[in-house]
Image 1 (cartoon, rainbow, N blue to C red):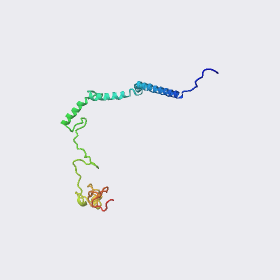
Image 2 (cartoon, rainbow, N blue to C red):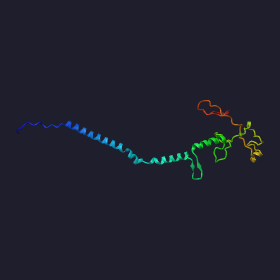
Image 3 (cartoon, rainbow, N blue to C red):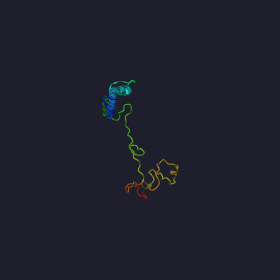
Image 4 (cartoon, rainbow, N blue to C red):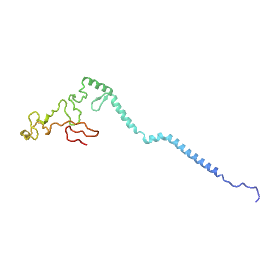
Length: 191
């Protein structure tokens, strides 16, 4: 075996690995770039395919409602409608002339309302009768409950007063923070 001397076979492993990694990275970047371009190009088409036309019903209803309050026309029942601006001006004019008759379909509002108070409602203009001092019988001659009189047993129409030491005393101020208020004249305070 004679002949020229050959170079030893050496494989450049580092070069092969670098070229392989660079090629894989370039393929991955190309795929991601193409997908991004495709998604950007077709996103509007896909959105319309998925959700297209869902807002047209709502927009149509809103347009109908705006047309109902902004245009004068006749209704199906033989009545007519006017624009909302004109209706508001008419209501203000009616309120200036007769504020008790703002709702045309109802009679004038001339009755007083009930005061917004806690408990049982009381009619306006009538004050409750004051309780008599010392638990005495109310004016009108009715005997107190439990007296055994014929008027009490017969069930007279006069209102009955509670038996005991007279009218209830007002609440006293609490003595310390968090303490319960007590009635004036009570024997023990709550702890």
